[in-house]
Image 1: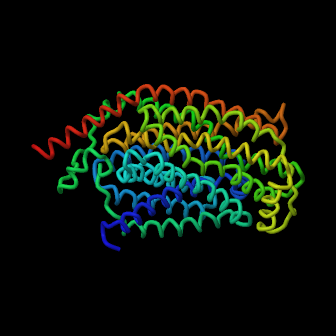
Image 2: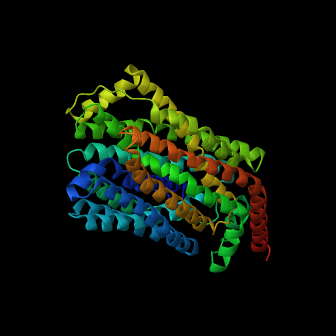
Image 3: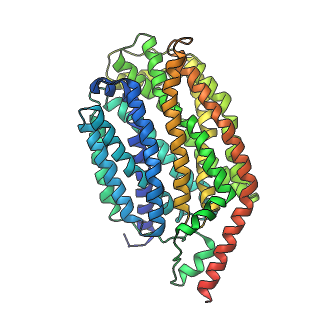
Length: 467
């Protein structure tokens, strides 16, 4: 494989995409095991849910520092350091024997995960031409969704007998990913921007770096404000969805299944019902196509997607599910029975259809959000702006994940389980309404901001070529 050649670049992209998936595997491991971890550590299930909420927030705050450092210097060592940190935190989670140790290990992992998300975005955005940003960013976002699903599956299946086993397994995978980084291609900052191709092709370099004096300019850019703020409300809704395995587990237990079988049932249903996220590729393609017609395109696609998904979420939460699985059987037998119920049980099929449509529509948010951040910001600002958006996302997701448990308990009086979970989850999806409105506002400001970035890059390229 020639260094810097097409094969080397493809390998590098694959490593970054896989790592984006792995950090979401780490995030998805804990929710299916809330009950088992709580029992082992002798704390309530809600206390484990609180740890998840805190780690979302810690990861988002750490990402700002990681991203700012990455926008000022070499990004590759930061990605390796972040990967080692989350692998160490995951190992510590598996070895913890008390709640305090579990909490500390999860926080350490969250700090490392912040580097993977923010610095990784900066690197990947330098590989993608503006015409294809929606498509490639949909693959980047899809890898994260696949990671979340894999984490749910690994947590529910491997953790069925021993909750520590999934964390030990992921630790080994994280160490392998760190070794893979050693052989990745050093991607040049700004190499995807058409205005800079002449400079880079002539042997020049784009040597602009972020400084503290740039922060007010970043914050004054109106589209950035809407893209960051929408993350708070969107992630309140998305954060609540990590409780989907619990909703389906409760439904299985309400039908008389044992806890071990119910955990597997809940995990498999949660995975099936999130398959619509794979259609984020369609949202990215539509965003690319519409963006070529109007600079408002990406934001409009995201706005329509999140608003149109609401009715389908309500169907998903309230249509009753009836499953027939062998209680106490092996995980494989339970999985086969759950998959068979998609065909044999009409309500399961209807719920799956509603879930696929709902997730497909809301998943149009992700690739167009990624692409818009790259479109309206300079190369040396993109990682930092992404991290600010990720911080808003972390606040929203922590709020959604933390508050929903409180809401579930408050609803237990008028709505006995599992109905309290359905009502609570449905209420939290209403946060998509202000999200859609903010995307519509971003569609009005993005044309001017995109034009300003193009003009500045062209001026810088002209100065570099003709001092």
